[in-house]
Length: 208
Image (tube, rainbow, N blue to C red; front, side, top):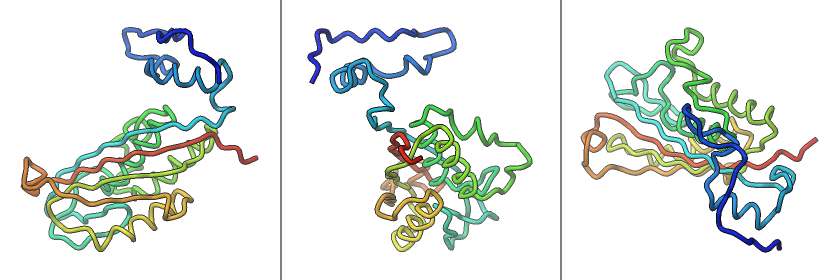
């Protein structure tokens, strides 16, 4: 293992007025760890793992279907949004795009675009999977949490995992979905909306 002589990271590209350049977006600790493991070699050639975080929130309203992870949930309200407003799938999409530094779902599927009106979020997730594949990335794991006071989701979690796994070409054991509540705190605790959080891991695609 290569010895690290300094704890100061000096990326070639620096911050500009528009925000961080993608090439300089890693933290100092990430740069140091990569240097320790791989030296100056390209990370993709060494099977580097990337992580992405996704978040989404939608209000609950009358007159809409409630769809989470591609599964329709019986409930008197649904999530408001331009597509089917599947908050769980949206968080996963953002986590995947973030891991690959490919922007976010608003960039690729802007609200207001006619082609995405009432679109199935699983269809959009499939397009995200293809974007990653075209960029040389393979999805390895998804871990997501849905936070809602009502309805209770425990009995639907396995179906969500199956639908999401099939869409992403993953084994169900590579897709984790958890359901939680806000314990009555804030708008989510009062049943006004649903939140989803997701983490995704990806690695360079070595398949030819």
